[in-house]
Image (cartoon, rainbow, N blue to C red):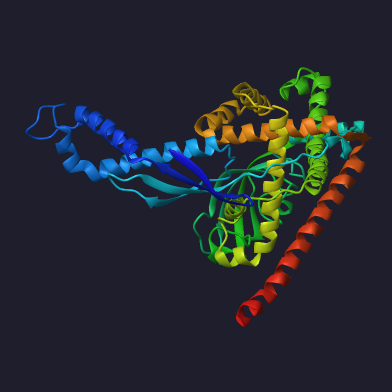
Amino acid sequence: MKIEIKSKKGLSTILSVVVDKKTIQFKMDERLSELQKEVALKGFRPGKVPSSVIKSQFGKSIYGEVIDKVLRETSTKAISEKKLKVAGQPKIDLKQFGEGKDLNYELQIDCLPNIKLSSLEKFKANEYKIKLEKKIIEDKLKEIAEQNKKFNDKKDNEKSITGDQLTFNYLASIDNKTFEGNEGKDVQIELGKNLFLKGFDEQLVGVKKGEIKLVDTILPANHPKKELANKKAKFKCEILNIKKPIENKIDDEFAKTMGAKDITDLKNLIEKQISGQYSQALNSITKKEILDQIEKNHEIDLPQNLIDQEISLMTKSLKEEEKQKHIINNTKIAKSRIKLGLILNEIGEKNKLKISDEDVQAEIQKQIKGMPGQEKLVLEYYQKNPSAAQSLKGSLYEEKIINLIKSKIKLNIKEIDTKEAEKIISDFNKLNMDKSQSLKARSSNKEKVKPKKISKK
């Protein structure tokens, strides 16, 4: 096999590959010998069909099969021999082929760029440590107690008040006519939460058990039956039962009903959950700060085929008109993603970072523990979706690289309270939203003048 670099321009390389006819013939004879053992033809004993007969009947398909295999093997060998880092799928251009001829083809390759990493020591970022105020934990504890309160039956002659739990049957009508889905049995609501229909709860305040109450209301605008949306309806409600709330005593016993060991443990779990939510958002800000510096301080050429693939993935659910409308903005985003991906991967490779199957399994177990009661669902999800586990591996690899970068840069640790955290998160979201809107506006303005340029040509 002869391999030559025919041309090299930027990240594009064209290899010329020639496989001599003797090699092709050897592969053909090898395949024919295999088929002799497999093919069964009328008039011949199994395994005794002459190779000439097989060739006469299946020659073209056998040749095609052999050439496909040779192309796969030799193109892989050619790329390896020339030590090329391939970006995407290479293209094969057949120049000469056919029985009794050398196989001559060109391999068109988009290569990954050589990346010269900047020193990480010059980068700096803020990392935030959240300090929760006791009041937030206490407020959350009260909220949990409120959400999990119990109810006791009221006496038959006691009237309902806001906060009571009502159980009732109803029969609804519009203009004295019934409609599909107009009947409800054993409906349960908590008065004052307004989770049924707007204005419904307040009309059931003051009723007694066994009473029939007529409630006037308006069906919602998003009613499943469009013809019923915003229609005035009358509900005939039969009050089956009324219960009054019992305030939970927030103590060790209550904590145990919530799955904690005691009240201290429950408070710790609440603190961990709230801190985790803030930390997740704040870590994203730190990560963005780091990635922005990395992107700004590296200049690399990007393979066009990777840009095209990324844009295609980003816009696959959009109509062609939408794709063209935001093509400039989407191209910018695609280039940024690819550039950062290549740089981070280079950092990972240079530092020999890897994610093992054990790391993935440990993360899955961590997710399982974080979702009590849904352990089986989480496990089944990853078992049935191998791509999800692979995606998780990618996320863990990126996280490992980011943590390595954090260990090498000037990281300013700031301890903040929740008010400061909310302001930082709010300012960050607003800034990125403004940038996004600005990009869209510039993209739109540029595209408005584009058709004029085309029409002049």
